[in-house]
Length: 345
Image 1 (cartoon, rainbow, N blue to C red):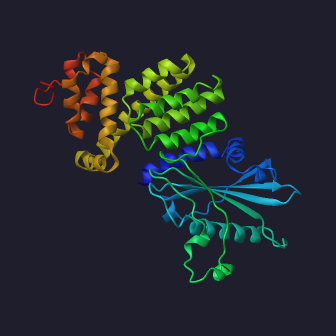
Image 2: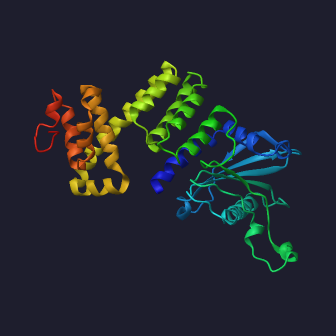
Image 3: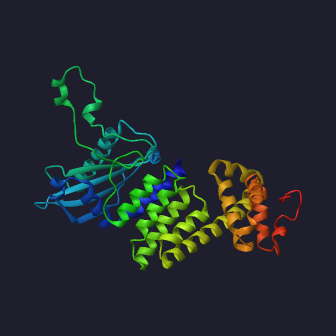
């Protein structure tokens, strides 16, 4: 779970730590009555995180300082919720982080007589829909007159789960981020990849845009369960030659790195430990993808017929590692599986 969440967290931070992206998100998703008081050009990211180490598998966060109309200081706090199911008590978690932000601000500005405004925003991308629950709704009361003793605040919760009716809008990068989060819950749906490629096609072919292409494609490779040839066919259909070249280069680099790491891991940890790590981390699938890619690149896509693919999928991690090593020196396809007891019959 931790490794998977780190994938989503990395994409969130890669995008939302850019001031212009964060500003566009706020412009699109906060009410106009609020936005007109926020000087978005003054957004400045803070380095502090308020999520405890034991909670990083559930949440990550970003804090921005901003100036309001009248030059008052305020904060925008993004809480990125990793949980696959809705957390009814997320408002309580947000309140805890808001208190920590205020305490830190008091230490840094001892002469300040008041507290700065904090606008809390929760970005949720789980599998099922999430509904914002205010703190006041969580406290059980025998009579409504007791509400006066409950701290309460609005929570800007934005739900990008598959069934959500939340509209994806904004700049290219914001739409890419949110479309990716919605797509990862339906990893076998090719339509999501097509949607993402269509948005990628709106980017220029300059250096900055191609870096974003790499960020998004790396996330797709880690989260989507789509056949590689389908991914490539979609790119051929929707992307420019420059972007296609960027995708191919990145894919080959990642596959090569995976193969090298697999061989090094096998030498360092031994075959038995390698099998255990493979079960725990899903490396079996990684080995398989690497081997299929290398076989097709070396000997042609035609060698991967149904019989060979089935043999690869039923192989042990040790066999996959052995065959991958043999590709480097094999003169013919059959040399990879030269032991008849191991290779396809």
